[in-house]
Image (tube, rainbow, N blue to C red; front, top):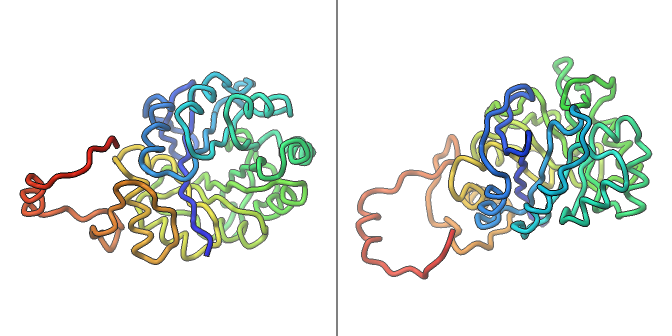
Length: 291
């Protein structure tokens, strides 16, 4: 059985990592390179950097930021935001990106997907799709950071992107973004049931239970979140321990794995340990480590 990947999304605004809420409110979190360093140590499987204002501002990608981040990143790194040309993709891979995520530029010029796949290989090309519901059972794709409707459905656009050579689809729910109420399962199903390439599910995860629901109810190969990972230490490791206890196959290769701890049934968060445990811990010897 293939392991589910746990992916951290880092939305960047003016060079700062931010907390995104519904694509219209952004709260500062800190320096992206520091977050990347911690996420690597905490067992994240992949990291996606999204410069969310590059397209709106007509900027090229921030190559210097990717260069700084890549020096601290030892898992697959994807860069997205403001990418319009093959040369920009080439520079991003030169500065350390393993994969390229394209969104608005692909909607304007679908041929860039095919060109990128020929130059870099399909495994390097991620097509990012932002969508919002237009009725109870249908969705529409939006471009330019969720500001322009395209009259395309996510499933039809994902299928077209796959046919053009995309190696992966990142599907993001605008209405669930930052809401902490869970993934838009119907949206993820609509896309993952349409394509044969890996799908990254994004938008709305607020606790480990939401990841479990997405893993069980969809065929998404990667479970992604942004805000969830940035406010709790060891969040990727504890999430993986919870998923493993619930029979979801994940990669666990960190020194601490939390396998023997208990989780709350309704949210999947770690249960508080009792005082006896901490008293006993004072007299135990543990191998020195840096987390």
